[in-house]
Length: 94
Image (tube, rainbow, N blue to C red):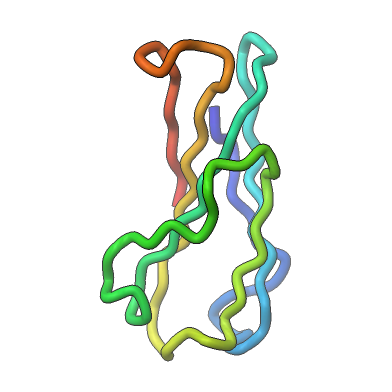
């Protein structure tokens, strides 16, 4: 389902600058897909923090200006919207 996660700039050299994260995904049946963006690092206590709710938009702008220095992981979850919850396909990418 998730093919790629890309950033509009190199996160390792642009501390303090916003980073646009975009996920490329598809569903074999052509169903709509929702995305949930998460962040883990020093400012989140090294635990996953949801940065968005489930959304149809495949992008999220990470505002790094309020983050402590350190290493972070951006993760996105994707789910198929067209099936009952127990039959949905979930996928993730870091």
